[in-house]
Image (cartoon, rainbow over all chains, first blue to last red; front, side, top):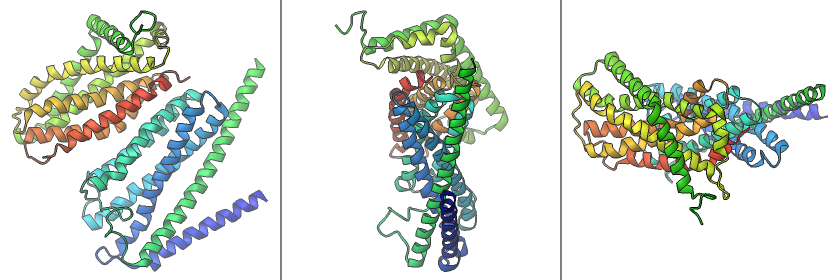
Amino acid sequence: MKKLAIAALSVGIVALMIWGFYQAIYVAPDDAAQGVTFHILYYHVPHGMLCYLFFAINFVASVLVLAWRKSNPTRALAADAWALSGAEVGVVYCSVVLVTGPLWGRPVWGIWWTWDARLTSTLVLWLIYVSYLLVRKFASGTEMQTLAAVLAVFGAADIPINYLANRIWRTQHPAPVFGGDPDAGFKDPRMLHAFLWNILAWAVWGLAILSFRVYIQRRQQSIETAEATAALAAD
Amino acid sequence: MPNSPASPSWTSLVLAHLRKDLQIEWRSRDAINSMLFFALLVVVLFSMAFDPTRATSREIAGGVLCVATLFASVSALNQAWAREIRHQVLDALRMTQQSGGGGGAAMFLGKVLANFLFVAIVQLVLGPIFFIFYNLHPLGDTWQLALVIPLGTWALVSNGTFFAALSIRSRNREMLLPLILFPIFLPALLAMVLAVKTILTGDGSDPNLLWLKVLIGYDIIFTTICLLLFDTVIEAE
């Protein structure tokens, strides 16, 4: 029954993603100035928004690790699984942003990359979370979990900089579409619909991957705990 | 009785840590000598690698100075906590806690102040050499350098001291420190380099001193996080 539910959910998510693809590529019209290239943004922007979501999950879980590490180690272990999974999925989404951005920039700006505030701070965000994942490889045990959680707090401090970068400075990166000027936004409702469908589809997809990752990590943790207990009993 | 030996005040705790670090450095001069020579090498290497003209050297000098300081201080910061591990000094230091807490933060601040002084001395010695090698003739407000460079150095040293303490328990700690410090320090490096470039070229591209403000904001935010989380890092086990 549980397997059936997971299978049905997976089919539903894939169907949602196909629907989002159909909306972005076939239904939404070409942009007046940018033409076909504009369709890349139906992937670029949702991934950018959602990588904040996953890094936020990482941040909240890391704060919980710090809060519970002494009082409730079992819960801290669970929070650590969420922190790790959030960072991993977030890095993947951030990578998608960094790949689709230049693909769009090359035809529209004529350059792949420029060092403006938005692009630079996104790259820094990506670098920080890659270093977070590296720290987890360099140490082990509960000590590593605490250290990684501390680093996650530093990483989270970069997120507001990244979010505000094209609001404070005049960047080459376009001004925000959502939550920016009142004049901003889509002139054609089909474009808005394609955006919203893709945000929904990729959010659900990312959360599903996140849950799988948490599940695997929890299994890994219980294996490690069992091994440690067995080793103690053998002594 | 805040100043009695039984419970020293927070400031005197900071000063005691600072005095200890300064005394060790005064006797060995390990950190300053190695940093100075290393930074000098980086300056010479860049000068040879790029062979800059007078105009381009104004453009790149800020970056070279910052990167030279960055590399040099990483080599010293790796040693800053590593030498406390011998003979369990670090464990002893952790016991210098106050009853109300904050002992870890005092220890951290003492270490940051000491390392800040070392890096500042290196920069003071290096600065004139730098001006000679790169034939610099700043065109902007030179007095601003006295603000920008210490602020950038503080950002580097406070984060660096924190992450050196964080990476001390890991395998391969010498490798780990730059890997986590550089990404976090990047925004401050960018602000510092652009501020120095504006001062040296005098191009007036930054009339509102935006990059200086970014540096101040960065210093406040990150030093606060470091102070708050230092206890957690030093007691992680």
